[in-house]
Image 1 (cartoon, rainbow, N blue to C red):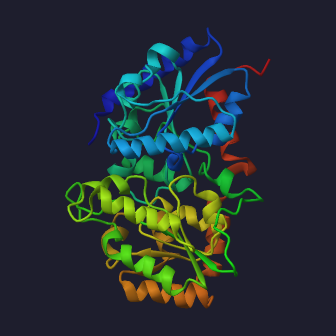
Image 2: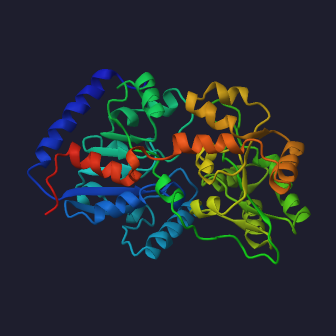
Image 3: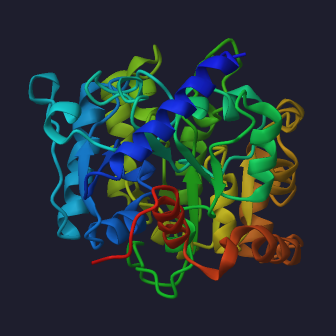
Length: 412
């Protein structure tokens, strides 16, 4: 058990007192923590809150201190470009000596975090410094696994609101979490608001003739972690995927969409290191029919034809495209054993393969030849599970809960 129930109940009482005291001051002070563009899920909610005079809203950039300095700098640069493109002022972070003190500078009432893990950020930014305030959370992925790792960290129990994607996720929280999911509200998956847009920007390199577009999204776990075997297939797939790009250069485009942490892991890997990893990433970036994608991915997904991955965070999200997807694994049993009922449905809609033969068959038969027997089942899954509840946007569902929970008066 991650947390004794008494500590949660004490925190819940403290939250009620804090909400009652907030009634004497307005506007509500809100801080969004942004770690990377790839994990930013709050754009539409930010826009709603920023336009509402009942809220004073700020975004603080805070790349993970677990990442290599080069990756932190890269993540911050991407975030600065992302928000500047949208005309949004952010509070930058350029290193330990320049870290903003969130409590002293903003004294926030609500804080929105991108991940439910402690000690990922500087102490002045970390969730462990703000359990006395009202912490809120959108899952950075459409959660498919079950167990304490998914639902029962300190964060899950001590946060004020966990905004989950479906009633199946709420049911898992009630079963697994120490607090029985009492702080969970179902609003839909946050990225649904972007996936369901009618228009998406074509982010693929122009080609001389039409090509099938395939995203390759490897996980970061190239070595054992937490006593578990590595999940990522990157090490044996690295050369294969570039070979496919060359072999099918007149039929195929490939986009390399690595987990944000993969570069850091490769820098530390004895057979890779910084020089080899940087050269590999550059090869993807400069190829005629290849590209490197380290930031936003929704337009990439929605303008693609297929995906190959071993990343749990994309297992559901790619189903918004309603296009074929392969999960790379030579043994699904350990993965399926950890899945919730929802997660099992997700992986049943994947083509599964764990070696070069399977990957090549997926590219040849499903992607290029168009033989896709899972198409109808994916359509049914999309309509049943991926559309937000109530006919509203996910951001609007979230705002409605905040306003009701804080008993805010109508806009003046």
